[in-house]
Amino acid sequence: MTLTKIIKTEPDNTEQALIGQAADILKKGGLVILPTETVYGIAANLQHHKAMERLYKVKQRPKDKLFSIHIADKDKIEEFAADIPVAAYKLLSKFWPGPLTLVLQSKSKGETVGLRMPDNDIALRVIATAGVPIVCPSANLSGKPAPRDFEAAIKDLNGLVDLAIDSGPTKLGIESSVVDLSAGTVEVCREGAIKKQEIEEVVKKKNILFVCTGNSCRSVMAGGLLEKKLKELECKDIEVSSAGIAILSGYRATEETITLMQKEGVDVSGHYTQRISPEMIKKSDVILVMEKMQEARIIQLVPSAKNRVFLLKEFAKIEEDGLDIADPIGKPMVEYEKTLYTIKQAIERVVKII
Figure 1 (spheres, rainbow, N blue to C red):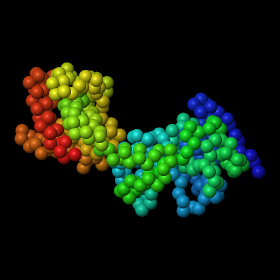
Figure 2 (cartoon, rainbow, N blue to C red; figure 1 turned 45 degrees about the vertical axis):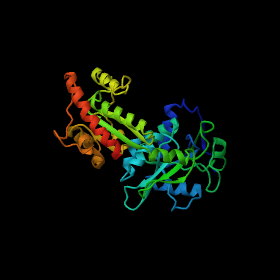
Figure 3 (cartoon, rainbow, N blue to C red; figure 1 turned 135 degrees about the horizontal axis):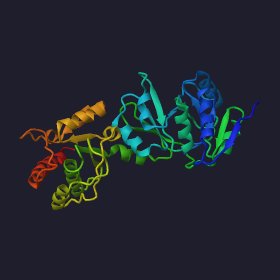
Figure 4 (cartoon, rainbow, N blue to C red; figure 1 turned 180 degrees about the horizontal axis):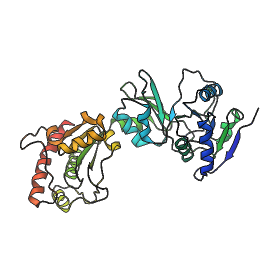
């Protein structure tokens, strides 16, 4: 029996040559023991038939029990999963990279797929460099404990894998939590490093996103007023955010907005603009925009958000003077006051709906 090649390295200081070596072995169908933040795993190329046959044999695992795919980029989830619910995006936004495996509907109809993004520099770099779908079940024989350190991982596998990377004890030493979202519900199948309560709290919280053009006046007003209302109602299960479709991040709210909001008892002087991103859209339950053009831009970025984006006045059922709320930027204070008045009317209704 040929012994496994073992390379010892520091967790956060691994040379790219080693990463490339591990990735090359995986691409060619080899097996590699990798560290993750949870436990050590055996990595294999999902697209390589012989590698997968060998992995099932090494793990002594029945072939009807599928392995989860490990990814190095959150956006990769859409390459493998279909009909991804908002709850999944909330969870990955909060916990990825990290010890959470999501079970979702697969691109292959009638099937499911498990996906995880590990919080370990070596694992992420190897997966990204390999450029092929990687599975990485725990590095133990079926029925035995998942290995928290390298010694436990190599004990039964020396000679059964091609390369093993030793980077010391894992950070968490407990397996990932597994959440099944494939049936339209949220089922915690395994409570691992993330507690069931934490998972349920993230999913339960409703995300409201306000969007305007520059994220320096209208969306800031709406977000600030809604947060004030929610605080008065002692409502803690709604999260409010705002963004703009055409602005660079990092600018302050306009002075007019800051002044008017101060009169409303809301301090937005610490607000800094942020540009809308697909991730923000995907994890939002309700997206409220000021004008039709913002609605169009959001749907262009994330077509699946179509049924979650509304004009603010439309959502609040305010129909006089059209449904758009005009941008006051660059106009006199009186225009800002009109805009605030309209938004304030809308928020009074919105808080009763959500």
